[in-house]
Image (cartoon, rainbow, N blue to C red; front, side, top):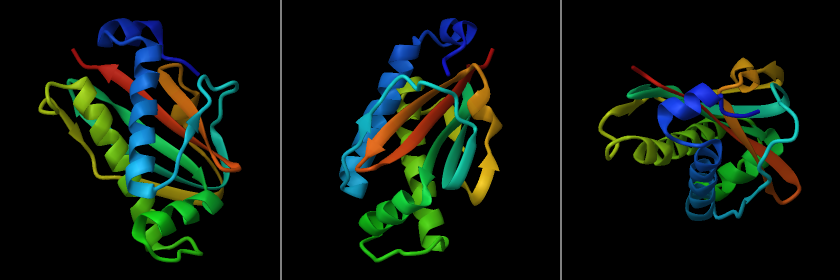
Length: 168
């Protein structure tokens, strides 16, 4: 799972730089908003596009750069994240959980947007989209224009992916 060389050239960012921005943003969001420490395990050893008992939050980019940033999290970890973030006990997939994971995707998108654009002015973010299920596939993770970073949180692994393209 790596950034396509054409995309790397067009964005002026190397795969390692993009990964570094995503890693920094994820650490910051988790330490300040979720009160959890994450450890990155970059690079991803094998592509992942199928998720079981998981939740995915995504935010799209439009403007000078287009793409999607996504966070893929096992439901068990998402429950812990939601409880920590909202200061309430969350023990089921519900609107609070969807809101929390969507907001984390939004914060990650905002952090990456600041790095990619001129003070954030030439890139717009979509509203977060959240999906969850017992068994689902996210095809953008199998594309060769995506950087995906696995993170460890306790005994769990979550993935943060960034698909990126510079518009002409």
